[in-house]
Amino acid sequence: MILENFFQKIINYFLFENKKKITFYKILFILFKYFLTKPLILNFGKFKFYSYPQRKDLTRWMLKHLKPWDYDQILKLKNILKDSRSLFIDCGSNFGAYSIVISSLCKNTKVLSFDPSKKMISRLKENIKLNKLSNIQVFNYGVGEKNSEDYFNDNDNEFMNLGSYRFEKKTNSRLLKVIALDSFLKKFQLLKYNKIVIKLDIEGYEFEALKGLEKIIKTFKPIFFIEISKMLLEHPNFSINKFNYFLIKNNLIFVDLLGKKIKFSLLIKKLNNIKKNHQTIGDYFLINKNCKLFVRS
Image (cartoon, rainbow, N blue to C red; front, side, top):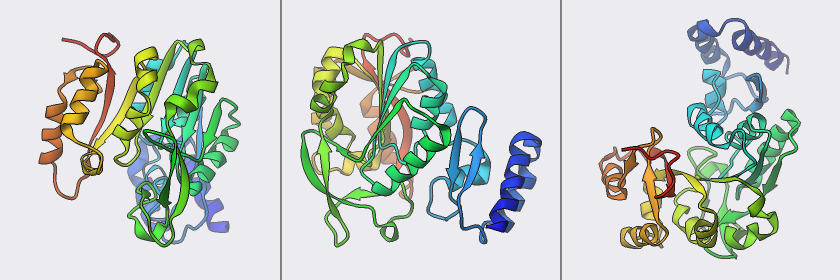
């Protein structure tokens, strides 16, 4: 613990006093990373995170770079949610990279965080307590088309990192509750919110989650923030034709992070052209075609 206390002082120095010399910090990180075993605190000013130095842990990236995870994308969501009584639903919250920052920066926003991993829910709760946040509710559920149960595997030894846990039946898998948000969100009085933003980063189950949201899509026209990955195409219940039909039926279109409309066929083409060792082409908004928030000519 003595070593972690010393390195915590190094972190604090470079976060608050010497941001310009990040290259020197990275050299120090390379020298220390093999000896660090306990979590450290990254204080980014308006929000904080516990960062774990273990190789597979996603928070290690923040420890290496002294930057919040996906901060540019989160700021785009913040600009949508700010100055409005809003609801942010984080499906695939992991350690809270999005939930913690949105909750800290958007005080009028209610945050609902879903993750199927008990380990990640525990990490999220640690960060909620660290930031003394009261506007987040956490749920250890999967999100799908209908209310059901499925086998979930979060055995660290079987995955490249702690963000790759899967629904699959293996020796260490456990039965987990899966909910359709159409039914689950009935108790949250959605009419009181001016905006609803839903993040979907759920390892290929994005279409399943959307099918379980069809009533909310039609009634409230939420803004979706979705990671587009090969896992979406590989899901056994996915087909391009069915997905296209779903988009047309619900008046949904994709736009990129700059606000430019993009056809789903082009996203498929991009997925098919990325390198074999890459999984995702990045994040996109999925919105009602009449929404003017991001669409531009």
